[in-house]
Image 1 (cartoon, rainbow, N blue to C red):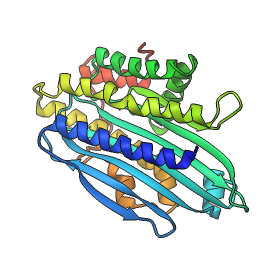
Image 2: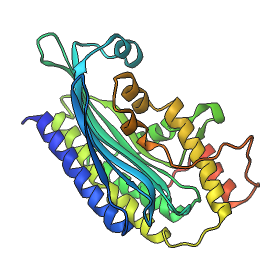
Image 3: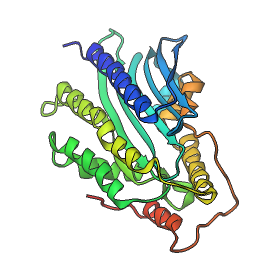
Length: 303
């Protein structure tokens, strides 16, 4: 089996299926595609949707990139070897309606090669996490249950482990360990072993990727028509500011892309179109806004 070729084909297929479903859900906006090439090797397909009925801004990107291991990669990313290859899908959706959550999804495979060109290391990583602005507990339970089900077919320990990793990764450490949302699953550097070979991790990533629409679209359908006020939009933009802070300060994917001369427009596609940074903004205690904030400060076991 050519794992690399099969993974690339899967990632492109996933991009097509997700984009078609999101366009149907939006009903007005369609994805614009930019194909780009990276001078050092490889390229990708960036698809962006904007100013729709449902999605204010979003992107579903694929990249297939490769190159020589550089000193910054060795120092910053702890990668040893002569050359590398990475392929994955990265997705972020920022809806218009504050009652519809922002969502992020990323699934990728990475290989490192030695002097002879043979694979010296290979790992899989990924995850999907939800960033609501207003907390509907039934939505949180549905989202987490979907990924618990996807994990359970492979290893009963995956969901609690990867849920905790997610809670401890998407954190603005500089804001009293405030999470950017209510999590999901997140895993990285999962290397094939005798017990869990490369096909196992491929199939697991495929199951998680295929679960995205099941996890997210029912929430969109339930919340997209709810009436909202300027106050709701104001809070949405405050929380979007936290999203920006995490992506620019802490996110390893963003830092990797910028360190390896990735396409800046594709990397920063994840940022929302409008945000607010207000000095020491605090929601009123006991309000719906505060309810969401407390769930971000104190992760909940939803299922």
